[in-house]
Length: 103
Image (cartoon, rainbow, N blue to C red; front, side, top):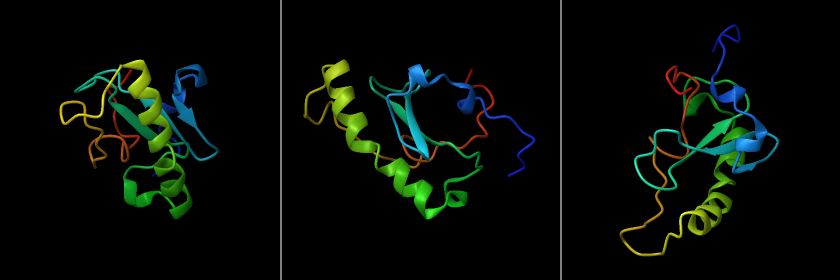
């Protein structure tokens, strides 16, 4: 991906990160489909999940448990079918930097 483009995600202040590591961070979605809907984002600008290195993918996935625990507390979610925690291609893990209307 051309580095001349700017990602709205990389402009998000660290104070809004739910969890973070050297290669990725997680934020709550500003347009959530449900309470606690979060996005995992690589710190390097990529267009698709497949462009992320193995290390970036592992770093992003490593945030899942931390985000789940925080979200269960913040949103008072219980472990029922109604409040299930899901990881999907359109949810937590693969948010690309092509979303222009985020901010």
